[in-house]
Image (cartoon, rainbow, N blue to C red; front, side, top):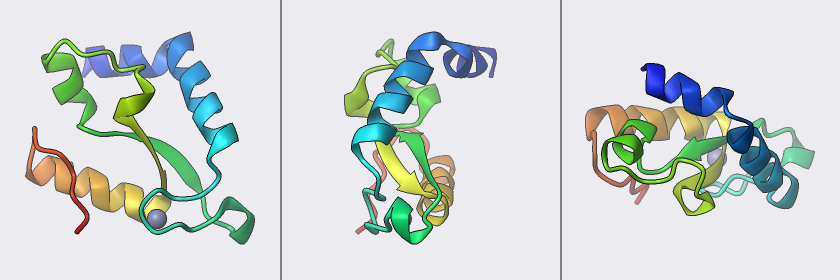
Length: 90
Ligand SMILES: [Zn+2]
């Protein structure tokens, strides 16, 4: 947990998150748009704990996906259920 908190406190996390959020203003999964009221956030895929356990870079944009709040909850739930596997919404 401490390693995960350290990622979210890191200036590199804020920088990559802001860059993603400024270039993509819709949900990757359901396409809900910020201008239509979607509350977007940046999700780690695979799960952050998996990225850290595998020694991968948690600030690599290829591990990040912009999701609306309901899709983010669904993705987190799926990751908890199937820890270590890629989230597949289909
Ligand atoms: Zn969505």
